[in-house]
Image (tube, rainbow, N blue to C red; front, side, top):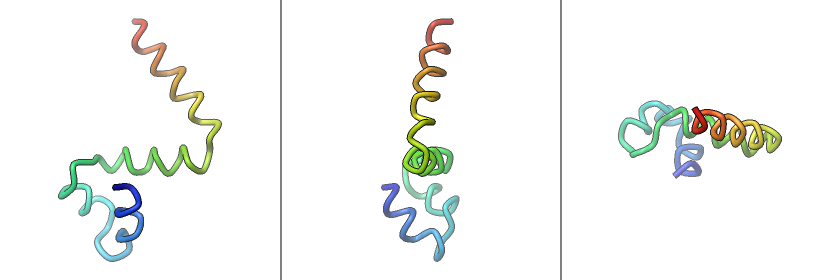
Length: 54
């Protein structure tokens, strides 16, 4: 789904595509960020663990 959005974002825009598909725009952007910056994955996992511990 992320690939579809990426391939069509210039034509339709990310937000417009995400309104139609069952994916939040933030999920699309987070997926791109994690692909470009794998070190952020560890931060996401730590934050998830911390939030679940409360």
